[in-house]
Structures are given as C-alpha cells and as structure tokens.
Length: 367
View (cartoon, rainbow, N blue to C red):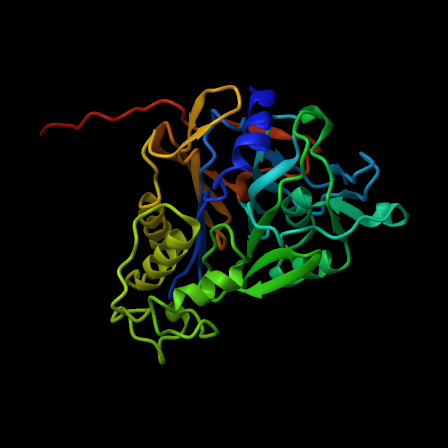
C-alpha cells in the first residue's frame, strides 16, 4: 500500500491536474473564537494516512538531498496530527498543537515557479525538507508570528522523501496555511526559492497557482478589497452579508482549485454570524460538506493501467480556542473529536488513534 501510494503520486499526480486537491477555510466567531477546517482529497487508496499524537520533547530529524543530515530539534509543544505514508512517517499534513496553532499542507503542483530554496551542504545543520514545514512549525511555535520567524531563520530545501518510501523519487511541492487562536492567518509559499508570507484575511486556501493569483481571481466574483478585515471581525464596516453578493459572476461547481477557492471564500464570509466556536464548528462542517467529491467522479490512471478515484479521504475542523479537533473519514459521516487539553503531552511517547472507517447510522427512537 505504501509503495503504491508513493508510486501513484510520483507518476500520475505530477503528470495531471492532480493539484486540485484540498480546500481550507477559517471562521471567526463574534467572541473571537477561531475555527479552521479543511478537506484532504487524496483518497486512502492513494495514500496511507495515520493519526498521530506527538509529545513534548520528541526528537525530529531534518532531511536534505544528502539524506538524514539536516537540522535536529525537540518538540516544545505537543500536537495532534495526521501524517502521510503510515505510522512510521513524520510527514505531517494537518495538525493542531496544544497552544491552538493550526497548520495544513496543500498540494502546489503542477506549478513551475514553486521551488524550495537552494541547498548548500555547509548549511545542512539549519536545513529541513519542504515537506517537514508543518511538523517543524507545530512542534516549535505558539503563534503565526513565531511560525513565520522560524521559517525565516531556517533553510527550507528540496529533499527526497523519507527513506521508507524510497520509490517516491521527488520532493512534493506544497504550500501551507497557518492559523492561530488570536485569529491571525497566513499562507506560506516558496516561489523560485524565496519564502513568501501572505496575510490571509479571508482564511481561504486551495492549490495552485500562487495565492496572489487566487486573491486577484476572487475580484471577479466580489468587489470586497482583499486587504479588508474579515467581515465577521469588522461589524461596523461590513454588513452581515460579508462579501458583495451583487456580482453577476456565477459560482462554478467544478472542483478545480480556482473554483474551490472562490466558493470557499464566498461561503465562509457569507455564513450568518455565530457566537462561539461551538456554532463555528457546525458552520465550518456545513461548508466543508460542499467540497465532497463523489467516488468515481475524478479518476487518475496510473502507469500500472489501473484507475484510482480521488475522493475526500478525511475532513478536519479544529477549534483553536478550546483546542479540539473534529475529524471524519470518507467512509463514515460520523465525526470524532480529540480534546488536546485531555492529553498528557509529557509522557515522551508517540500515540495513535483511529477514525471511523465504516458507515454506521443510529436507529431512531419511536415514541
């Protein structure tokens, strides 16, 4: 399964429009509570997903083109994550740490300008692979500002994937959203080797091309300036309608990155106001439901001649104020929750958990 996932990604996805995978939003309640939610559109027949809890003090190893000789660090903060390529992997693709910092990984290929920084062997001790950013940030930072400062002082370079997937012979180019419990939100991209930090006032992210293009494209569907504060936080200047709904441009329903960005931005900003994270989680889930992909609608043909369906493998909605992660899989509409404040992050032991993988429905009680 792991070798199949690696091979599929290295051949089929890079050669197609497979970058159309994953949608993220951020909502803010009237009381300031922050909710971040996202989908993952690489199905579990393509990637072996694992749900993993890292304790404080866990040792991490940075990777370079030369192998496991990059930066080493210990986790300052515990975190709940999902990792790609199984239990032994540290490839965090989504996570929430004990201080309410959330980050997610979003595929950024095919997009030619998306390149990590150049590698110098002399700087290996301060270098990590681009696919390790989420792992690094969640284990070391409490806020968006701290996360950005970490990246400014670390060489983020191109490196082959972890040795356990040695047939995955490319470094996946991705970009990231980072949200904190104070409502700060940025998108992190590496364009032609340079770190680009984009303020993300609407909290929306999808895939390629670069974030600036998506913000410009959004103007076709709204007259709201993209440097304006989030409507839900700017009650005096913006009506409850959020984005200007008077635009004559209709919303395309195709699941491309461009279309999903516009719909996610519109849906999240036109959502009726809510009081707290409890209502926000429900609101976020209702938006994420609109990005489900029916099994079989999007297919990728692998070099083995077989077709693989692209569906939403899992959806996560995180309450950054109360440090709770809500998760569901493609196989079951039932959400489970992980409350970080109930986790002992001092054990020194990595833990795992499962999410529902079978469809179940409760019977009604007839009165």
